[in-house]
Image (cartoon, rainbow, N blue to C red; front, side, top):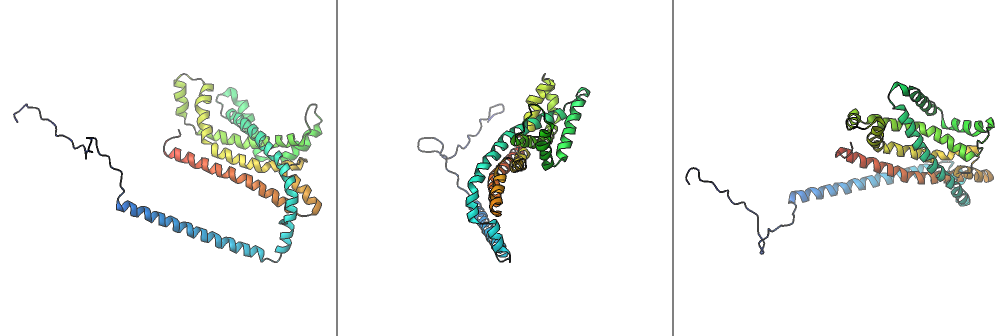
Length: 307
């Protein structure tokens, strides 16, 4: 080969060829070491599951024996776990539960809306918005510090005592108002934490694109803030679902008050246990859904899917 003569590249090995001249694509075959590692992991998982199941069974049996063998168990079983009174109270409790569900839906929507407005008011910038920020801060501090039961008593019995024209005396509406007042303060702080967690560079980038303050808040800040605080918001809704039973102190016949009416007839507290178990049955799916949403958002954040 003389100087200046072009050097042709060596032909690349295209791999094994099939009979028709195309590349022979063979299926992936894991190595023996990988198969052995997967078998070991499966065996360890099965062993851990068996140990956890055995430990849970032993603990459950021990607790059962401690409770059943206690001296007062026969009387406790008759008073709190009587099947006859449970069957008698269940239809009435389910009828009252419909009120709790309606309160959860209506009050939950109102809490989210009012909490978002309060959070936005607390994060407004500029001296002209100082009175609004002060009012939102005072509202949040007051209702977060005021016990819910006292707020219910003040609204349910205090508002009708004013004898204002056009103001309802319905215990359901007044009890729902007290729930909204208290929970909106907690939700406002959740929203405010989400808004303040958005980096200032996001606002600066939006303003550099020509967006105004309101447009930046609506299209850039709030979508990110709300997405980040979904898990704590769901936790607040779980708490709200349980606290809807407190409207019974106003005389509204919900699941708790229905259990109280039934129990007062027989002086047996099994209806309270039935109502409590129903609330637990409603809360567990919401709690598991919250855990699933939290885990999903954590995975997306770890992969860079959430700004």
